[in-house]
Image 1 (cartoon, rainbow, N blue to C red):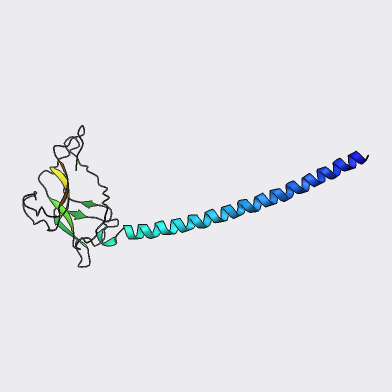
Image 2 (cartoon, one colour):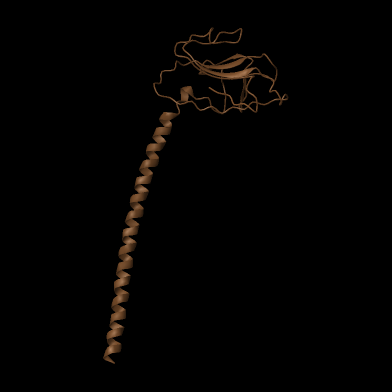
Length: 176
C-alpha cells in the first residue's frame, strides 16, 4: 500500500514537473516567436524603405502611362512614331524602317543604378518580327529627329548601349 501511494505521489510529481516544463517551454517558444516577428518586421520595413529609394519615380516608366509626352508636367518625351495608351507604350507600328523613342526630360544624376526592362515585341510578321532592331541608350546627348542614331552620331562619352538588331533571330541570342 505504501508503495502504491509512493508511486502515485511520484506520478503526480512527474505530471506537475512536466506541466511546469511544458509551460516553461511554451514561454520560451513564445519569446522566440515574438523576437522573430519583431526582427522580421524591422527587416521588412528596412526593405520597403530600400525599395522606395530604389524605384526613382522620375526615372521610372510604369503603368498607367497617363500624360506621357503630352503634358508640360510629363517627365518623358515621345519621338517619331511612338504612341502611348494607358496600358502600353508602342514605339513603332508593325512596319520596317519606322522609328520611335521615349526620352527622359530629367538629367540622369545617379551614381549607382540598375536598369530593369520589360518589353514585348509582337506583330503580324511573327517570322521576321518586321523590325530593324531595338536599342536602349544611356547618353549625355539626346537623339535628334531624323535618320536612325548610330554610335558615330551620338556622343560616345558616357554612353551605354544595348542593341538587338535584325540579325538576332530565335536561334541566336541578342547580346549587350
